[in-house]
Length: 191
Image (cartoon, rainbow, N blue to C red):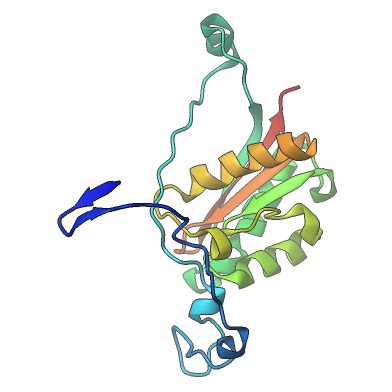
């Protein structure tokens, strides 16, 4: 039960699940940003509530504290370009991070790309030549929601879970910041 100024509410299901979607109505939805545009509520991520916490430490600290790391960070990178091209920035950040790790995109077992809009997943998969079955395998932000301020942690934790569940070792997380920039992180799961 969650209490607010409007009273108490029981949270009994995921707020982002689109139960009862009527596919025949999707085609007729109005564009969100410009007349004749292609982004609608159906292919944009819903803003959602979310919180996350991560523990990041040196290997020495983890060993001293008796903690078993889930993964190690192999590399990370940032990239920026003109804001109107924000949708392609994750691929450019990912290329830099992969290069710093000495890896090709084909070496990635699984990838999480935050998708404010479904086109983000599509253009970045194409740019990196990633197979659809390797990216956002449990759904991206369009399906799960976009918890502003927690999205980076959400995709990283999801990526670590996917690597564990599916026996993957190397993962790539990438996220755009909407202002033309993006960050990418290459992780390797600990055995």
